[in-house]
Image (cartoon, rainbow, N blue to C red):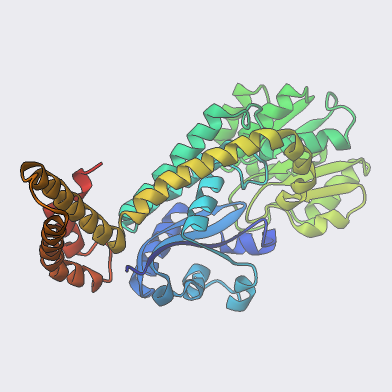
Length: 425
């Protein structure tokens, strides 16, 4: 029987703090490079793909789990960064076979997201799958499991109301701002970064009646474009300190690797504001704002993990739809698992025996139909002879199949083709 297993190793907002997640975060190019390195350096690993979002860093692998030892993956995942392997291992989870498929399907369907039903995660999962395809590290099993995950996510989106509202991390950030300020009509928001998350936050602010919007982006033209579209004001990125005192709400959502705002920056801006309340939301991973900012007078800083309290209020409301979504995921897992099991050697042996038994039974019935004069003892003798012939013919092929260690071994594929096992219902 094959030792091939599907497994998923990683950490997420459920198991690890943002401080660790941000230090392990990967971009597309690095994810592809590390996936290739994993295949080269980890014994027993046949296929792999990496997934990295603000809430998780995960490796989906297929191969001999005993030989691969996913703990060995940690060193490669660390990628030379100043982290202790044991520190990472304390926050890791490992899912095998069905549990691995279920986890991936739930992630793609946004059932494992911080914001239940948020729509961005499916695109992120697709992006990292495509990275693995380009890197040449996704094979037949990962192609199948990812596409089935996408199918499950599409069904969840279309057959349930879990995504009925435009809920995302960005929109939750705006909801949190509204809890701090009674009204947004006389407030100004400064959005640092002009990517999808910043755009979503800006649209949410506009829809909630924000008094003013300012956009700061390293690429000034993109900031101008977004400001024009959303009736805001573009500001030069290098002049953040000049415009910071004008902002009641500041949201950071860039991919910067260093703090964009330090404690000193915000302290000076707060002084110029007369210490009126300032609300900062850091959506970046790595974080955009120095966490020490939260110690300043009348300054309130929330990072992406702090949004959990607001997100929790949405979970009960979406619980009923989530239950139906879980049913869909289970249905899709069963479909995938039937396919996965058919890759194994044992089902090939069983299929071979079943097909031979059906042929033997059919020919015996035909023979007995023509020789109606035979007695019971004669029938039993003929049946025993027919079964003995079948068993002797199958003995050598089955013995060789039992020695196969990989389900995609040529002998397994050849046996299924020669005996037409995949042609049967």
